[in-house]
Length: 61
Image (tube, rainbow, N blue to C red):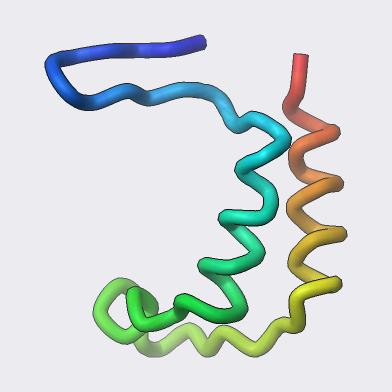
């Protein structure tokens, strides 16, 4: 599904998104200081990659 409005597009997750999620949860984690500072992020890349791949497989078509 894809929803568009002006310059915003919401869509279902696609496989290339997995590496973005891995990066957001292992390298680019500054967002967590304001979004949920009480929830520590302590995962490694491979654990995140496996987790997001499993999630993706469970929700794709």
